[in-house]
Amino acid sequence: MTKIIVELCQNHKGDHETFERMIQSAAENGADYVKMQTIFSDDLTKRERFEEGETLPDGTVKTIKRPYAAEFERLSKLDLSLEEHTHFIETCKKFGVTPLTTIFARHRISAVGILAWPEKVVKVASYDCASWPMLKELAKYFDRFIISTGATHDEEIKKTAELMQGLGKSFSFLHCVTSYPNTLDMCHLSRMEWLRKLAPEVGWSDHTLVERDGIKAAKVAVMLGADYVERHFTILAKDETKDGPVSITPAKLKELSGFRRLSKEEQRLSVEREIPEWQTLLGEPTRPLGHVELLNRDYYRGRFASPDGKGGWIYNWDDKPLV
Image (cartoon, rainbow, N blue to C red; front, top):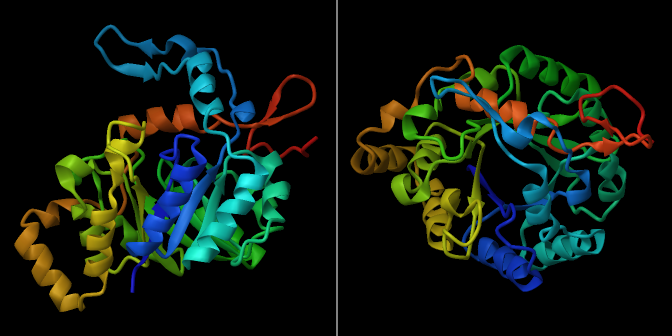
């Protein structure tokens, strides 16, 4: 049966009580895993070309505009300390769900890795799928990897599979379209077939717009045999947080959890009845990255890094020792 990963992202707004209520609600409505993000605003890098961005005369965006100061101010209100990581783990255990995190900078791995995770499983973000030094560092602390593959080229994904096998680690690949949000015809869910040639388990990390598309893509992914489905989750109004529009509510989570418990025949009949356009979600098993995905790869890969002790940065893909 498909396992559901609920991504809390930054929908807690840095509020301790909201954070805890999100975990409880996720557990009560069918989540198997609840995931936080190990993000520290001090690890945000300032890269000059994103201060103003670049748009060509014909209107084509060449570089995203994402000024450092505004992003740092936003993130600084959302930092979660190591003590709050421990509380997150204990709260997940209390409500019977498995805690997960995604670590965004290499130098944070050791401190987070030694915490009392009940299962030594870690989620790797799309933009670090090909950050091989980071994966090797994570392998010192975690036994099982769930790796999103969005904004990653096919040859990089293949190399990551080889690395995981060489490290002797259990791993899963999640197909992901790194456009926020993505449309149904951008989903290319048949890509899970290609990923299954490389990984023992596969799944779908879903960023479709909830108000427009509900959980259609997630349901089709379940019907197609996804081992995991990951969705952002909120208990607040969709406009209260940055990720709210692509985050499902407790009611939608409960609906998805109920759907995965149906027989395959029941799932197929339900999809054909409720999502007559479902085949448009299949797309192609292999394809070049789209323009938006490449723009996001350019910005988000390198968004966070580790200090090198000399006023510079060690990026997650840099094969350099940490300070």
